[in-house]
Image (tube, rainbow, N blue to C red; front, side):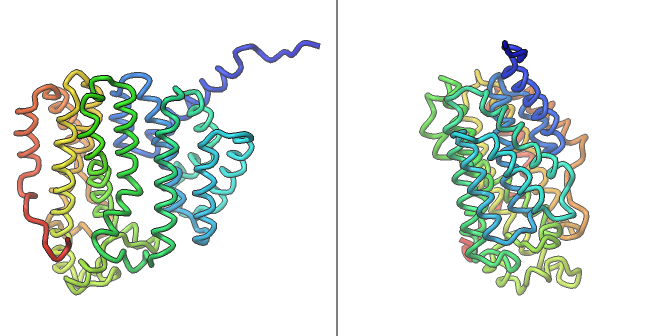
Length: 360
């Protein structure tokens, strides 16, 4: 008896999985939902599924109520199923249920839905060009291994040991993503390939700049989850404990600490800007993809600087009108390096200062 299964069933399955990924992206990231669509095909969907896989890893780290050893096991299994070996589909379904079942009750619905949808994400991922798979798996492996090691060996409720460890955490969570994106850009674009040495050497700064900005925005929310990603050396320098960060009685010391860490984030952002300008002007989509979150990050740092609400329950962020202005201006200037330099200088006005030697 002949099967009634249509010949194009695998394509139909991939199409439905791709639709799921496109729906999920704006639910879990306002920033990347804006800039991923400006990438040329097939980079747009390759980066979409790569981002969603990384976001699942981040959700395990941030939102799981499981013990450290179970979280580490889930992160390791995520890497294994992303390798697309034998029996990856049933393994992915089992892992999705396992992750979702371990999440805190307060975890956002979008994060829970994404974790449950892991099999769909992997179906879409499997349908992408094979040259992209190795770069994505390498990123997930580095990210998950690093996060498991760092959180297992450090008491994150008390902060990380020093600035090096905070930046290492930023690297595992986001710097590895910057390295993956760079490898994808180079794999896709012969023009980017001509600058591969510089781009590869500076790829991590992009992710670290964005992640450190996120950490400074989310101190209060992280504390509620029982985590602090700031360096204990910097906290001690200002006579602070993590709990005192969110205590209004210690606001002046907290703002002084914030200034120190904003200087570090600005240093990383400056390196990320030089990285972006090295991307060939012919690759307008890739340049735009980088410019939008970078400008939003430095404007967020300006909004945080000296802001007494920075450690309060309401997240400090720039207005949507400013996001739209960033998109408009940088799109118009994407091919003009001198104009971009002047605009970036204006956007970072007041942020430039030496990083304290006590932090380095």
